[in-house]
Amino acid sequence: MSEDHGSTGLHVDVQPYDDLTVLHLTGRLTGTTAPMLHVLLAKTLAARFPPAVIVDARGLSTIDPSGWAILEAADRHARDSGGRVIVTGADSAAFGWSATIEQAIADFGEA
Image 1 (spheres, rainbow, N blue to C red):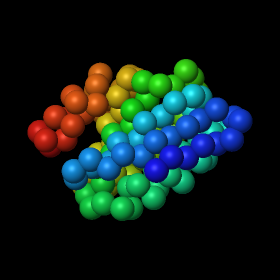
Image 2 (cartoon, rainbow, N blue to C red):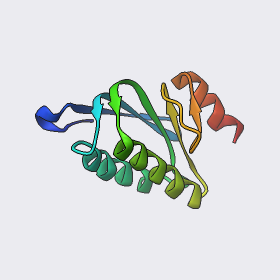
Image 3 (spheres, helix red, strand yellow):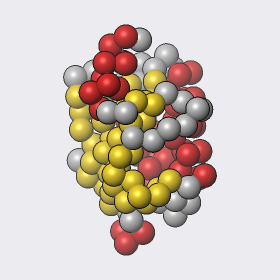
Image 4 (cartoon, one colour):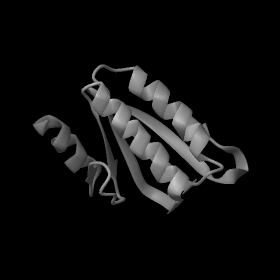
C-alpha cells in the first residue's frame, strides 16, 4: 500500500512484515504532511495488538518539529498499548531508534 501527500512531498510505502508493519517514508515530513502520516500511523497502530511499527525515515530529506511530534505521539500510544514504534535512520532521544530496518526487527525480537 502507498500513500502520497500530493505535491507537498511525503510518500509512504506500507510493508507488512510478520508481526509488525514497516512504513517507508520518502520526501519531507513537515507541518503540511504530518497530518497524513498521523492518520496512517493511527490506522497502523490499531491494526495489531500489541502495536509494532518500524518507521523507516532514511528517505526523508526533512523532519521538522511537527513531524517529530507525530512520531513521538505514535510511540507513546504504542507503549501505552504494550507495543513500540522504532524509527530507523533518524535519531531522537524521545523514542527508540535503530540504524537499519534489520536492527529494528532484531530489537523487536528482544522486547
